[in-house]
Figure 1 (tube, one colour):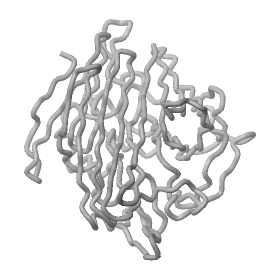
Figure 2: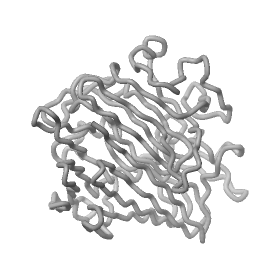
Figure 3: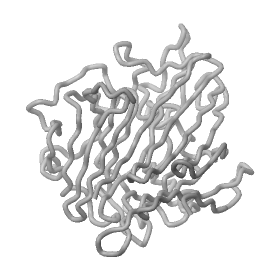
Figure 4: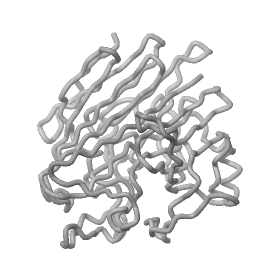
Length: 349
């Protein structure tokens, strides 16, 4: 069946947690839970007659709530909000008023605060099989949650096509002026979670990066990547570059095209061991590349050991910390407006 729904468990909030399986005729499957909007697996049949799950995660949804995982939390495969990445000094000015949000990364805020959208049980608002299997879920973030003003309604719709494209669409509306910058925090490993990603090749369609301070908050300065270690404008071995810098945790401003859909090809990654190519398209202006240096040592799905560089992230979003940088694109959402963004993961074998 193209769409299946399985009950998992009741959450502490009283809401029920489910796991949805979207599948296509080629045998590709994506499993998504309404706990944190987590993509728990994205699996394709391979030439060896087995299956290749290209995202890091766990066998059971319950494992994402285990104290051991939460204690060293790397945000495997979840929705991030209200704001992705870092808000410098966990504060910003909005309509002449100073807003303080929860600090959870030293004096800064990371990925929406201590309990962001990644730890919420989302309400299922719809699902279907035509023309492609899809599921939609919603979360109402109440006024004042993690310090943010406004009741914010957020929807996310996941869809899988026959072309092995897994997409997610965000829509958000608010009743007070607030800050919004949503993303999805998937970790990719194109070899069924085995080994690490240092022998992969990466191409990023961005000519500039956003400079960060020593605590990884963007400053407002934009640096051309030409003649730097950050230049991935042609396919480049990740491991070769990691001999020059300890990690990548950088935001790239993508060189947009004129596609009428608003989607632009943000990045591509390929794995020689499996021959898979992952393409990331999005309507957002930035893709944040993270090499997973701080993935803790743990056991993932199929008893696979994870650790540093087990997976990479390509997080599409508005410029991080844009709420504090006037020259960056706005991440302010006002009543009567609608926040929208779309990201597509396309896998080619």
